[in-house]
Amino acid sequence: HGTAASPTTSPSTVMKRQQLFVVDEIGKMELLSKGFVSAVRGLFEAVQSQQQSPLTLRLGLGVVVLATVPVARHGMHPLVEELKRRKDCQLFEVTVENRDLLVSEITSFLMKES
Image 1 (tube, one colour):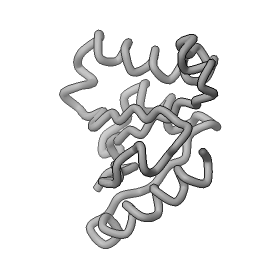
Image 2 (cartoon, helix red, strand yellow):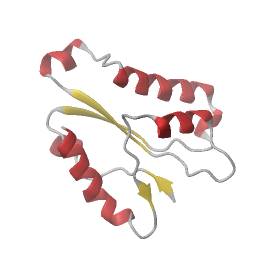
Image 3 (spheres, helix red, strand yellow):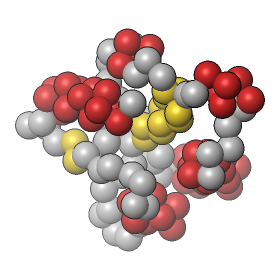
């Protein structure tokens, strides 16, 4: 079980005017790396503050981050807690029962947001 999912549809097909960053996965081992934690935090901060390249701004492109985060078993890493609390994030719970259906659900969500 986890949270979020990555659509298999091509990002260029899904979102005509958006840049898509996929972070798969923000897991236990990755969270042990201070560099990884700093990079992920920086990515989300850059997206939030709309720090985009001049090319991105000129083309009118937005930025979307699609990331998988763990479900807490014995406490959560501070970065995971931060990401789950963000008001600009949409969480999708991945289970064995729904994982195949999430591809279309997340793709629809991303298309609606673009």
